[in-house]
Image (cartoon, rainbow, N blue to C red; front, side, top):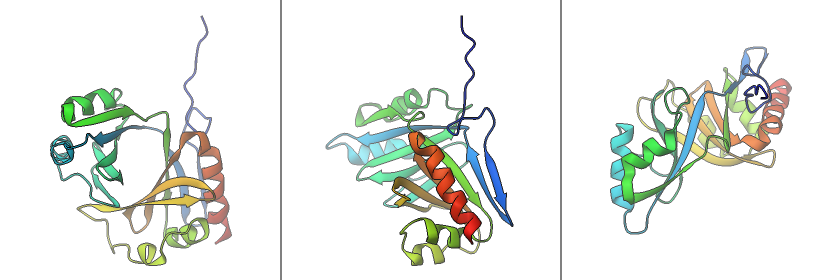
Length: 195
């Protein structure tokens, strides 16, 4: 029998990271993802049940909410992606399905998405080179980490459809397709080194 070795999205058995001056780009492999879509006519009930599971309101349009143990971001009308640490949510889709019941459809997404954190004082400058987010969105980050919902914007980073989540003024989480993880990391690293 073959001894299989699990690898992260970027191909290593440890998270890849790189630094440039006072900026840091880090792979975040320990996240489980699942999508939630409310069923027709059950949108309010699904949102309420999702909020119960999160322990806070479900995120509204272009928002991310939650904490280090349970979080979600808005992806479309009555649709969200939820995330937990993989160690706590190995069967995340089943857990969330139990929570929302017949009000929503839940699909496992862990193998479909990956997360990369960009940290440092120049995250805005890097994003201005990487994507077409509204500069006001990037410039209007709060002066300190938010305690409530934060912004989660859908954008394209070098032709790769992604979500950019503003966890703090110096910490952005990029959620992108796992199949494009190498390209996403390379694109952001290139622009990080250009500033």
